[in-house]
Image (cartoon, rainbow, N blue to C red):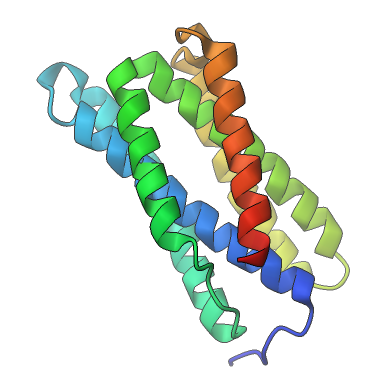
Length: 179
């Protein structure tokens, strides 16, 4: 059964942002895999990244469906987020495994907090959607934990790198809500 067009503009913003975020996450992992997959010494990273990319793709597929069902337009920023995500993935992978993990840790920390806030905001109005946000948050926490175990905080200039990536994620969220 198809739901009617989403009447609540805040829910439309959430779906647009989350769709874009999952799209960018897939692009980040693709960029990192392109670097790590090319070197036999880092194949283990490429395999790990593929597993995380597969989970992000599952999220993206769910948001693709929700956008159509609820007649919510995707962001016009999609091409930019694709290039930016892929580029961020390539650059952090070229910096090394710990920097790639720092990227994942920074992104997933912002996103899990974002999903948590959204879930709480709509819990009464949209319990099913709230449950979806909570489920996806758990996947993001798992990715963050993998990154921490992989040495994210040992990356060169971790504080600076993480701070820049987190700020970029937060700016992308604000832009995507409207554009």
